[in-house]
Image 1: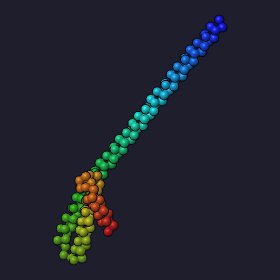
Image 2 (image 1 turned 180 degrees about the vertical axis):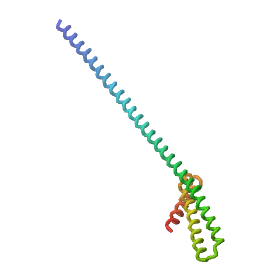
Image 3 (image 1 turned 90 degrees about the horizontal axis):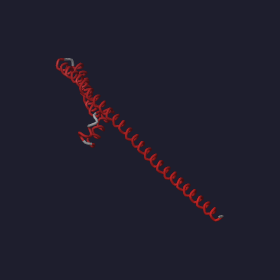
Image 4 (image 1 turned 90 degrees about the vertical axis):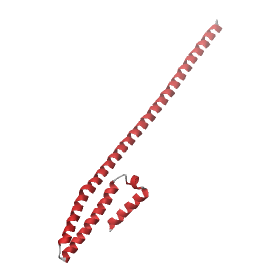
Length: 153
């Protein structure tokens, strides 16, 4: 009888140990699966956040590009036309003035207007983001360097 009690106790102990081992294994596997899903979720969340920030940056750059193009067109079209009209008026005055001193001032002013028109054209072209695509990197850099040199004079 004593051996039956020991056998029953041993069987109960083995069953309890088996159940406990099964529960511990189940909990460990469940924890690992949960941790993996959590890591995958966080990685996907970070990826979506990065993608979202890149899209916002692209949108901001596109808006800036469009704004600069608009400003460049407005400068070229509106102010360029006004300077051209001023140059035409100066040319008319140049032909009708007989006084040499006044003619000299008109010629100087006409030269300043010409320089302003050229500077305005260069500035409006530099505001256009497609200048590199249209003319190539080397010519674009050369153009910008020339514009900078002209401004220092």
